[in-house]
Image (cartoon, rainbow, N blue to C red; front, top):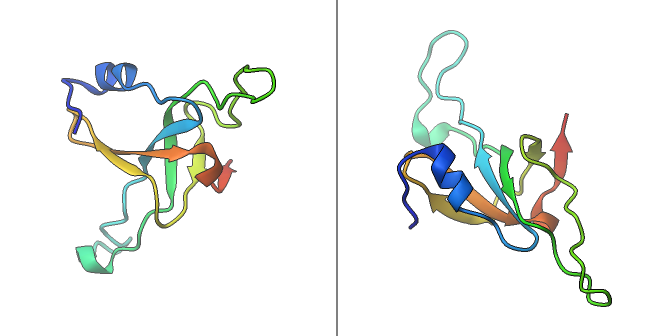
Length: 108
């Protein structure tokens, strides 16, 4: 796994290629509003995340130019339950690399 010293350095050094998007999944709910701790096995999988970095886009086969991605850094997106490649950086946070086509929707 790739490891760097800080999130700022790590995300700048990890540049997704082509139509790949680096996403940080939202944190799972670990406590109810009443303060009851939810066991790890009972926590639902988080299907939302924030875009941290994007690649330049896939290449158009006829012109060779990059096709721009529909998502931008900082946007919230809806993710599939399975898929993506897990990447751990030096800040002890998990990130996931997805192809743009795998992202289900933008969340506003």
